[in-house]
Image 1 (tube, rainbow, N blue to C red):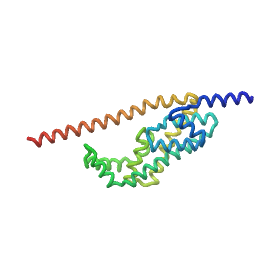
Image 2 (image 1 turned 135 degrees about the vertical axis):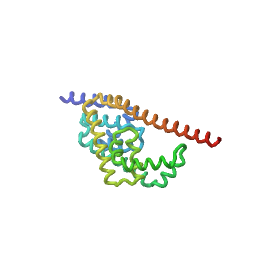
Image 3 (image 1 turned 90 degrees about the horizontal axis):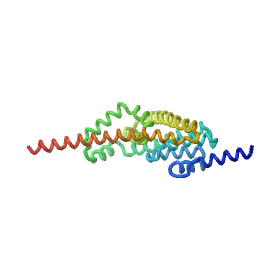
Image 4 (image 1 turned 180 degrees about the vertical axis):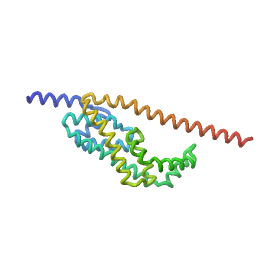
Length: 225
């Protein structure tokens, strides 16, 4: 019986990733337990290149190995999501509307009318954007900044962020828990979703730039007549 338990522990250790982001997250969880998973997710919010679709299933796998409780890791990762989002909300609030508008106005191809339209859109759809944005790559982090700039009421921001984060975290942690040693299959599948979102955003930006350049060209052509 003792030999079987030792063999199981040894096998679980061998199945744990040892390199890259997964290895880094594993080291955090080994050192801090479920709190380490929460720290990793808080940092993921601040540095979007850190993928939650790797960290969360890995946390679910760790829970399936008995390193900490499933509910415990879900609570800690959701707390990490909220802490990271609050930090970016604070950045937006410190920048304020006037500074943000001044910075955006200096960007090439951006007009004051674009900024006003964005503000109007956020006024109408900000609550949905914050909630559903928590379930989209890149936007998970970035949506907190305009929420801070527009000074969305903090209780509303916290409620929407907590709810959206809880859903996103629970899905990936539970799948990772169910898959066990095959937890990495989640990130492989979700990687396609992330690439699709990035492709759509890139296409939208490219379309915006092309339309603006063409309009600018037509304006110059008219002025020379």
